[in-house]
Length: 325
Image (tube, rainbow, N blue to C red; front, side, top):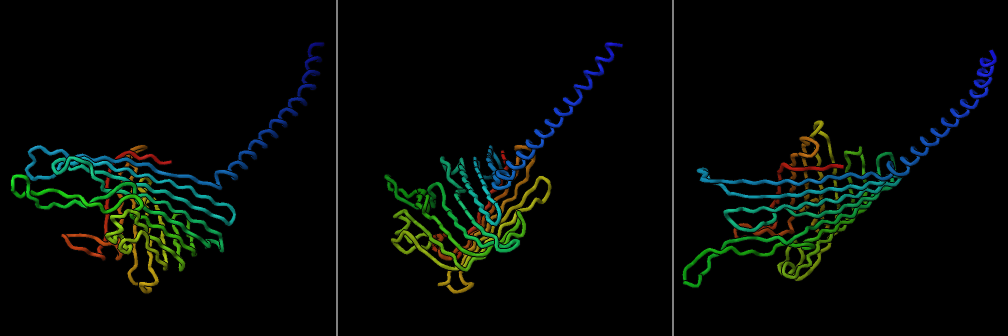
């Protein structure tokens, strides 16, 4: 009986202590949760980072192949990084896109030649004017990494006095030749996170050609022996991206520019990009990237003739490794 009474007394003294300990634990858990939520508001919801790295390779081998064809080895790399800031009425969106590809036709030449080359940085700041409408400013930088060449076969007389064909390479571009700089002030209507369009009546566009040889040719619309050409006009941009299916995504970007000196709605420059990505598994993907460009100021040599109003089109298709984050 004595032991029973002592046990009851100990329990009576312990229960309040346990209750107090439980309350303290709840308070600590609540503070930790609030701290975590505050950290999420301060970091995760203010800055959002995303990106994609893709590497695709292709190879064709032919041995006694009756229909004919070219043996080739190709390699293409694509990288895209995004850093977007949003807080209150302020938004700031930044994107870097880098593409590079090389191809070697084994039967034709013994060197890799580039077939894709692009480096672009775009930054847009916006201040909210209405629900989905922003006063915005855009800065866009677009160039390339490496030199580009035009190859043509010419007939020459060799040391033995006989005619033979030789391939001659002529420089047609390099890093910062051309370099396109675009800066605008306008209105940005953000329908959703996946769809927006932007219109600016105040857009400056500068085309830079730093290479002396190319500037002497008047390449990319600059005046002969000049290194830069500036234009002022209106600018329109549309961005859209959708998930066609659970593992298939579609993205497109359309940019239009019209210099006022060319007349309103005359000689509109077009730059339209499309990318379709199908994720097969965690690492393997199938990608299609296309770009259509129309610029009447860019001189294109075709069949030994010069043209100023040809539509340029590039399409790259590949199966390879993709990492998204």
